Every structure is written in structure tokens, then in C-alpha cells.
Amino acid sequence: MFFHSWASVGHVVLASAMVFLIVVAMLRFVGQRALARMSGFDVVFTVTLGSVVATGAISRDVAVVDAVAALATLLVIQEIIRYLQSRLLPVHHVVRERPDVLLWDGQLLEDRLRQSSISADEVRAAVRKAGLRSLSDARVVVLENDGEWSVIARREGESDESAFYGLPIPGRPGNSPSDDGAEAVPTHPHRLP
Image (cartoon, rainbow, N blue to C red; front, side, top):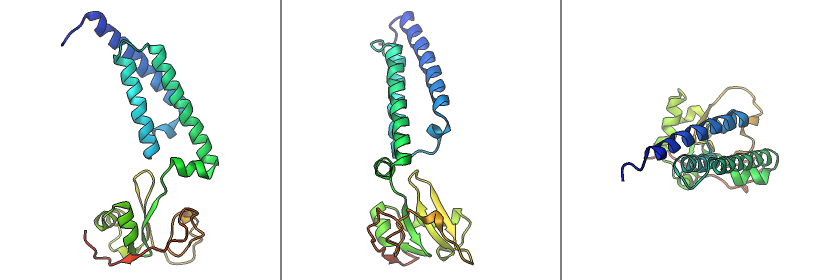
């Protein structure tokens, strides 16, 4: 059926506008972090939030107040989880995927590529986007937990490499509690794909 009544259309317009304004207000209250690059947790939250917004805007069986209560509940849960994961490492590891080190010291890591289902071509593309001409010019290539690539070039001189703490670095079992001291298996730089 294409048309029920003008009252139905008016309900959808009014409910959509109200839910939209309330979501904007709630997200302003929560802050920029809710709108930053998304991890898997953030994607699930966003899809769930969108479903509640759509249901509240279109369904005549769901009152706007019920939709707002559901939105507020989701935002409160997200804030509690963000608070806990920023202070408790076990919660952090449940909520956020760990970053994957796919190249270390200019060497592609075969076992990590296979484990992550990432091709060597994807790593090479990340290296090129970082302005490097060779894999050997990169100290580390990391697929971050938000899906972005981090490429750190080799530098001359000493560094404490403190930005690498928590990453599963080959040969540094104490660097990442989740790595269990696993050694990475290097592969040829011309590996295809």
C-alpha cells in the first residue's frame, strides 16, 4: 500500500524531526569521541542507534518517549563501557580489537598477514600512501583497531619507541600482554598478492 493517510504522514514527519533533534542533542552531550573513527564496537553501537532512530521515526507502535528512552539507554551504556575500557585493561581488550603489526623492521610478517586475512599488496599500498618507496624504509606497519593504517618510517638515531608499547612486536614478548611472546614469521618483500 502506498498511502495510509495524511495523519500517518504527519506522524512520521513529526516523530522523525523529534527523534533527529534529540539524537543530535544527545551526541553533542556525549562529545566528539562518539563521532570519531569507528572500531567494531562503535559500528555495532551506530547500527543499533540507527535502528532505534528508524523504528522511533516510522513505527506507530513505538512512542517517541520510548524511542528516546532506548536512545538514552544506549548512550549511557556506551559511556559506561568507554569509561571502564579507558581504566581497565581487560574491558579494553574485550571492547577493542588489538592492532595488528603486519610489517616489522622492513619485513612482511607472513603469519600475521594470514591471521588477519590481509594481503601484502594492502601493506604495500599503505607504505606508498605514507610516501615511502620501499618496505625496507618502514620500521613498522600497523593495521589499527579502527581500520586505519599506521606506517612509521625508519629513522636514524636512538628512540625509546614508546609509541609501540602494547603492540605485538616480534621478539619483544614483554611489549604486549596479548602477544604471549609469539614470534612472527618474515616473508619475502615481493610476496604476491
